[in-house]
Length: 178
View 1 (cartoon, rainbow, N blue to C red):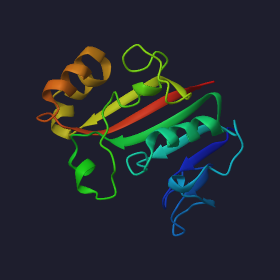
View 2: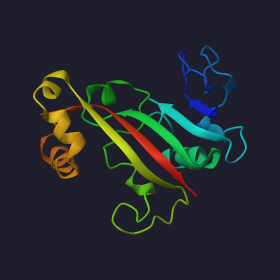
View 3: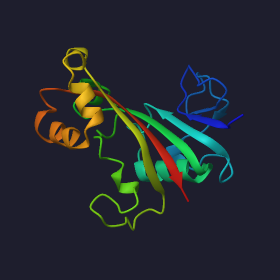
View 4: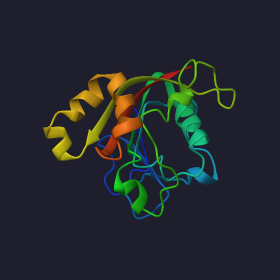
């Protein structure tokens, strides 16, 4: 059985996972505040780390990704779900500290965001999959398919069209590189 960590599990922990949350009124098995310290697990403890609607809430996104990277085994998976920066939910929740795009995690990719390794972090991730969800009308008109299957179109959409054809949610699946 793969070992799965559900960070910020809330009331509905991922089936079979160890749940972590800051709130004691959740399905958490372990209480932990990522903004106040490390996850209470050894290095390379998990095959998969899940963070569904968490990364937009943390104080230090780089330190949080580094913690996910630390507790995940090499070749393991980090799964992150977060609102797209153009979704109204990104701005209407007062606990959101950041608004993210499909390129926000390029910082952790080999070669970095602009073809240069990041010297602020050692954590490296490889994008396995990215699904951007759009509002239903745009999905029905085929824009979601274009955004998800043509990288050039995703970039064009985010730079020029995204405040008209708004994004909803992004689902990232990363491979941990150590």
